[in-house]
Length: 96
Image (cartoon, rainbow, N blue to C red; front, side):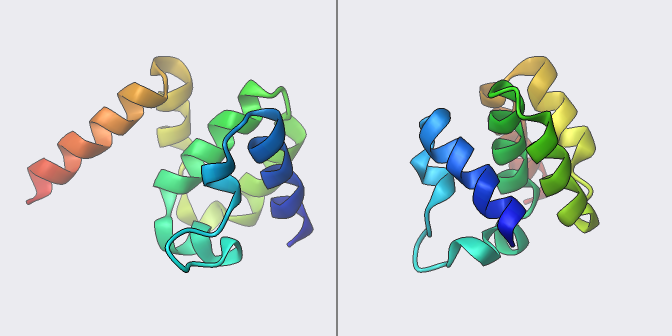
């Protein structure tokens, strides 16, 4: 998936987020969006938009539109990544 590869180059090098642009815990980078879902895609989308790469953010969003992460991405853009992460923790606790 060339769009994801280009997007991850921007995220990893321009935005200094190699944690998002590399394999994690033996999970290849190409399947991270499917396995980690919106949590991963929101972080990638946020960094792309912060890098002023709406073109890549739109391509990646379209490629993984089945995940339907738009509301979560808008939340992170409005309130910041830390608030988004905190909200995810609170939701996980509430679901337990």
